[in-house]
Length: 252
Picture 1: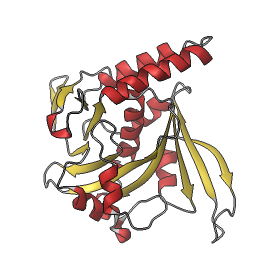
Picture 2 (picture 1 turned 90 degrees about the horizontal axis):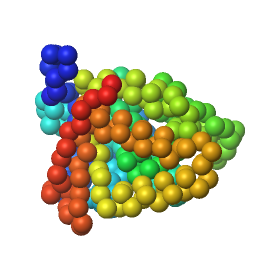
Picture 3 (picture 1 turned 180 degrees about the horizontal axis):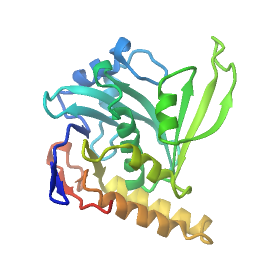
């Protein structure tokens, strides 16, 4: 819940990392194949879910219904191959909760976590007629290219990108996700702070003429100031249960 302009907003969904003991619940969401919005489909293994839940480097979130406490969606980062890049992974939304912008909010969550880490680019490869195309199009993600008839079954693969070097990229995503409906949890840790400094050094070297590192600083302050964003701060090697939470004020 938060209050703005003397109006009280009741959060319907919380997007957060999972805790020990919740892995199987998340797996069931990913593997509800008849009720899913997903990347390539297939079975999501329990051990992979566990590896995505590193406290200082979160790569998996669940969307929890605040009324029922049930998981109604889940998403994961598939890779961080380069310091400036986030690769979107699988996204699942149970059928009864579709068309509520949950998928959009989970895409936004992964972008925001990337910002905390100083990452400037996010990508997704969508196969065939997957419903995530509609979500990414609604978020105005950039269609960077298409490999036609690429798969064994003759389906095409479309590459989408969200680049923070485009001024309106974050605005397009934020505008699509109702802040009165979602609370989004991010993580700041020794890992994210070290990576932020590394990326700012790189941007200062290669984008000195545009001052992009200062632009990223402004973007991070905006994220920290969103009133529906909670940043869980970790020190040292603390576990998720020991996270200190801060709720930011809104710039929006």
